[in-house]
Image 1 (cartoon, rainbow, N blue to C red):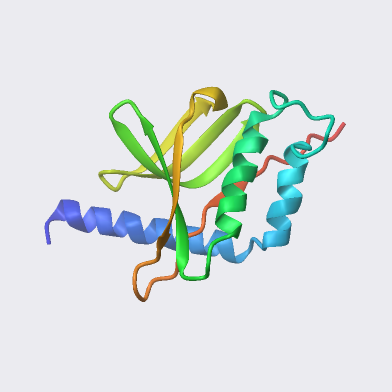
Image 2: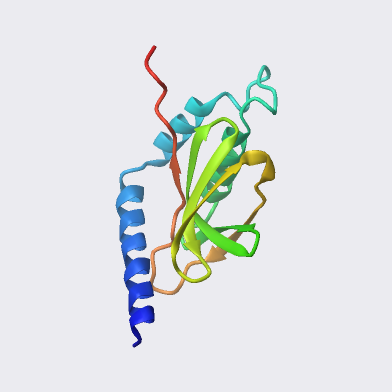
Length: 146
């Protein structure tokens, strides 16, 4: 095994372990409650342009929540020549999303982008035999105390 392959394997295992630790502490009911804290995306008074980040996160969460136990949602984002498999979504503001994941070379990569310019490809796939399906993590910023 070459040094490069060994490094990629270590990074992959570290990412999987970190994702596992985070996902074990995050229950589905918590995800829904946290998504609501981004804004009322389903309410009649919310305009589609109010909180685009919440809309995108809610759609990805809905796709992930509808998966069978042996499936995982693969979310791909291509920017320029770089393709990222997103494993974490973070919305620092209503119009910006930060995606963290793994690029085609296996390196941990982050994309910071206005929501309007993001194009995501989402597809449910069966998990690898014997492996626990990966789940996407959603980080919702805590509201600022007034």
